[in-house]
Picture 1: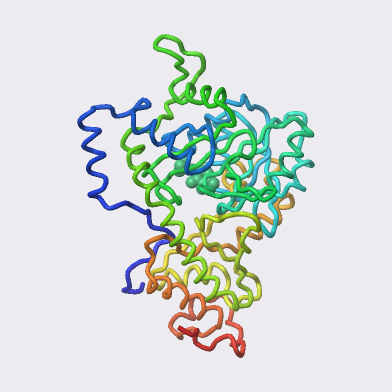
Picture 2: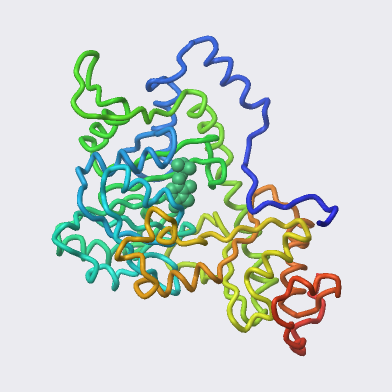
Length: 404
Ligand SMILES: *Cc1c(COP(=O)(O)O)cnc(C)c1O
């Protein structure tokens, strides 16, 4: 293992501690810790404005928000979803007694492929749960057309899509307005964090109200409980932190954009390393920097992962394994290899490189150097043991040292 400091796939963004102290003082003075206190109300209002949406309900995390969102729409039976996501997507279905039905993804976007949805619909299907993977918007129009044709709900797992906008007829709209509900995550590893947290974006005030009841045990007033709700509330501590984080998030996304641009410049010429093309007509949030290590890259994805580890660069294979490969899902008829070839291929090729706002140029250069060395087969001998097959010969021009 290298003596250099570890570089993680992400580092949570935090405001200066001094800036948070006055918020804490306010909480200590008021003794309002939770249950929709003043910080909670302010964060809902300020987030709605920042994101360009109207109705938002804060949650303790996105998983409970997904579970509650499905419950609020009374979704049952089967729901068509992507296997290429974080496991909470499918878990939220199972927590509602719903059977996930996996459909394959699009090879270009790695989002649920709309052309694969119809074949997965049965008389039990009640909804579609797509994920805006890496913050890249799904083909929301195509998905909505299918949902309308078959009278299905659409619940977006938008955990990656904080602040993402789409251009529709020359106007910018939040991607969170698509479908019947969208769910955000404010987990420590996400673009916008409240330590732990999440939110549901509702299309109207009535839906928001139902969700607000469900996240508070189903209480509608002091003595009336109308549903088997859960405790999904966000505390004042998390809400206060969110207010402060919101003041810094624009700059944080700009810094991510610069890191993204530098990776693209430094890695675009390596054969066999596919970078996902930015989505047309969308403002990205640069939450992840996935690369696909294809067959003609000199080393395999797992060897590149190990090689980076040896240099203390801790990348992650999001999303490997597929959700459909976990023990509680792999017995499902939709979990077969034959049903999900594109997702399986992506899961075998993907590597998410480190990206976070506080990443220094030197840290990024360390990552770039290892990937370029691997891509050029110019490896020091002591590292060759990690290869399962001999590296290919150096490809002429490519391996000149990268210009500074
Ligand atoms: C992070 C994440 C979640 C879960 O979010 P939590 O806030 O940690 O519960 C759900 N879905 C996806 C796609 C995620 O990346």
